Image (cartoon, rainbow, N blue to C red; front, side, top):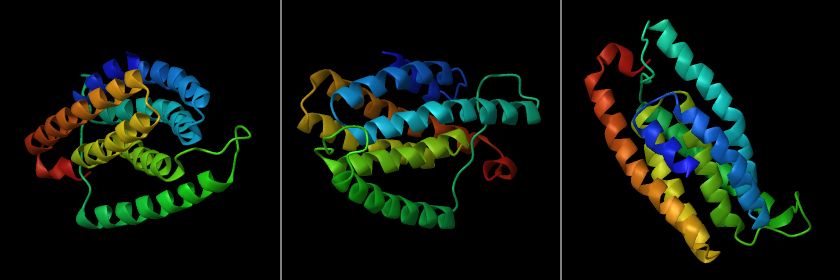
Length: 194
C-alpha cells in the first residue's frame, strides 16, 4: 500500500512521496529476497538510498526558485540525452543480465529469470535517477517500460498480489506521464531544459 501512495503522490509531483517510498522500499526488499529475485533486491536498495538524494534535490530546487509549495519543478531530456540514455540502458541490461546468470551473490541460488529481471532493474535505475533529477516525461516512459517488465516477471513467478501492485504502478505511470507532460507544457521555455 505504501508503494501505491508513493507513486500516486509522485505522479502529482509532490515531494512528500519520498516518505512513502522509503517505507515501500524496505518492505519490498524483504519480499524480493524471499522470492530469490536478487535484481529486485539490488534495485530497491538503490531506490532506498536515492530517496534521500531525491528529497534533497527536489527541496533544493524549490528553495532556489523561492517556491514554497511541495510541487517539483520539471525538465526534459534532449534528443542527445535520449541517445545516451538508450545506450546506457542497453549496456546496463547486458551487464546485469550476464551478472545475474553467473553470480549467486546474496544466496547459493541464481536468479531464475536473469534477463527479464535485469531489464526491469536497469530501466528502473535510470527512471529513478531521472525522477530524482526532475526529468518529466522521460522518466515516466522508462517507468512504463519497467512496470511492464515487472508485471511479466511476477506473472511468471505467479504472485497475484505483486502482479496487482505492479499493474497499479503501470496505470499510475501512464497518469504520471500525462501529469508531468502537462507541467512541462505550462513551464516557460527558459526553465524547461534547466
